[in-house]
Image 1 (cartoon, rainbow, N blue to C red):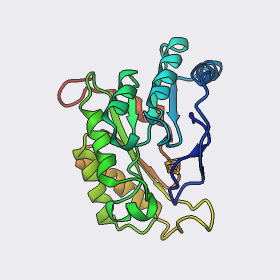
Image 2: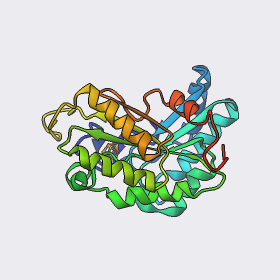
Image 3: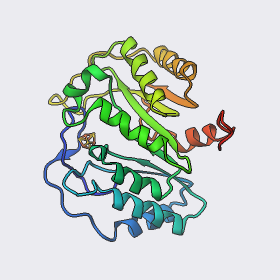
Amino acid sequence: MILGGVCTRACRFCAVQDGTPQAPEQDEPERVAAAAHAMKLRHVVLTSVTRDDLADGGAGHFAAVVRAIRRVLPRATTEVLVPDFQENRAAVETVLASAPDVFNHNLETVRRLQAMVRPQADYQRSLQVLRIAAAWRPRVWIKSGLMVGLGETDDEIRQAMEDLHAAGCELLTIGQYLAPSTAHCPVQRFVEPAMFDVYARWAREIGFREASAGPLVRSSFQAGKLFRQARRTPRDDGDV
Ligand code: SF4
């Protein structure tokens, strides 16, 4: 997790501290790359707090970290899990220009619950960020994630999955929401484990290349494995 531990937003499902962050640390790209190198990572997932205080939302910093990792681990693959950059196309493209293998932005929940769960975010804005990334060439794998148990219906989950796929999303994670404290959104239901198998089946029916669904699945859950599975065979249009 880069760009500090203080977020400019206050999503009601998230335990990250909100407030006024400090300036990005200029040596962070090299330090993250050194850590990835020391751990001999094969697939590196980078995420951050949301930095609405920065002109580019931290996009340049993301790109610098991806490039620093590639310098020391040229065979490793990288996955960025980014904020919405307030739908700033230039910021999204700054990240894409660093050529991560996977571009991940979480939709988090269904359309009806967005304002309650992530009041400073927006369903359509998140979909638009994914659309921008899906149109980028050379292609990057597009990924997103949903939580369940926040009060949504299964029909709404299926609709969110269809909206994500229509936006160009190819990889999907779905996991059970767990409340970090009593001050956060309460859990409205614990989804039966068998239902996650149904979600994964829906994802395949809708056209996702790969989906990981289960009570403890999170955005980065077996991320390298999901990515390797997805690229085992060329896309329908022949692109790899
Ligand atoms: S933007 Fe991300 S880090 Fe910030 S509060 Fe929301 S989920 Fe947490």
